[in-house]
Amino acid sequence: MNPIHRHAQSLPDVAGMVPPHRAAADDAGLADVVPTAAATRAQLIVHLVESLASANSESGLLNLIRHLPAERYRHAVVCLRDQGDYEAGLREQGVEILNLHQQDGSLAHYLRLYRVLRSLRPSLIETRNRAGLPAQLVAALAGVRLRVHGEYGRELARHGRASLGERALLRLLGPLVDHFIVVSSDLQRWLVDAVGADPARVTQIANAVDSVQFHPRLGPAAAVGPPGFMHDGAFVIGSIGRMDDSAGQIQLVDAFLRLIASPHSAHQRLRLMLIGDGPARAECQAMLNRAGAGARAWLPGTRGDTAQLLRAMDLFVLPSLHEDRANLILEAMASGLPVVATAVGGNTELVHAGFTGILVPPMSVELLAAAVSDYCRIPEMAARHGARARSQVIAKHSMPAMARDYLAVYDALTGAETLARTA
Image (tube, rainbow, N blue to C red):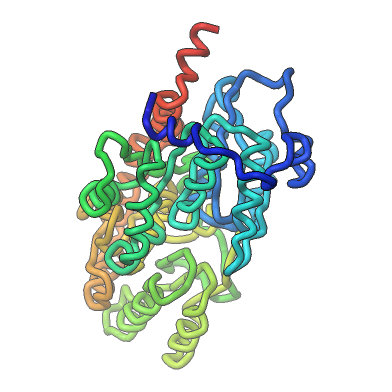
């Protein structure tokens, strides 16, 4: 038996902390989800996420669950904070969603998580990113036998990977983790070299995208934006994501303004579409207005029609200073768009420079403008790179391929595949 598992199983219950099984379920509002004797033989996986509020990794979780065999695994999602936009889709898949109502500075949610896990008794828990790491200790105390942790590049991508405190937390709790899942070889190397994770316990699984939902436009671009924004011959530069100092939209606006101020006639076709909200949105709009370019840009805030908006673009740009939005690159590629992205983290694995897009250093407005200009002035190159990007997604980043990789990790830990064959 794995010594980590022996350690978890030998931990005693905290006296007076956990009511009997049914009472714990009632206390957490979970009585309806406690497995009964007649329940399916499928093993339960608990996915712990910070929230389900329009986050790409959580939409990826929904798609993962859709592609895993229901006869082998069933699922529950525990949210530290609000439930959010993907709740309905998950419930349609028969997934129970529970909210711990985490509040800053309060530890009460850990007690609630302990009770939830004692009630659900999952075969495996998977936590995600820094916010989920402390739950590894709670899961061990609650007797969850198998524990997986996923790093998807959001927090660790800041400041050249992670702060000393974050690294120390990973080192401290790492021995409780049976297996790590990462989305890029860059993160895999970091976990092994900087944190000391056993290479045999780290698996890289590339992000995937729904290539049916995200597809190239089949005719003229949709007339999105305010009146006069789109016109015949317009070349639309688009970017999607939260607008903050690390996302790079200010640098993209700067590059856009330089291009439309240049004498090259092709640059007069340029339009800019920035989708998302955040503290940098007002500054971006102010920059455009001061330059008299407000009518040539559209900053509508957060939108729910990402697939349609991508089909209105001619070029997707991801100018972020740190790796944290890989799914957006894949969605753009699946939509048949060339991609200009900063050469950070896993972006360099997704965007093949000179083949499906162009990579530029972060904060380099001049090189960013030059890359956008190349696609605007050479539309044949944009079409060629976009078609290759779509083909790359279908070949390497399909949902079934991602699900097979996750299934291999889950099956290796739980033995569910062997049990299914002998049933």
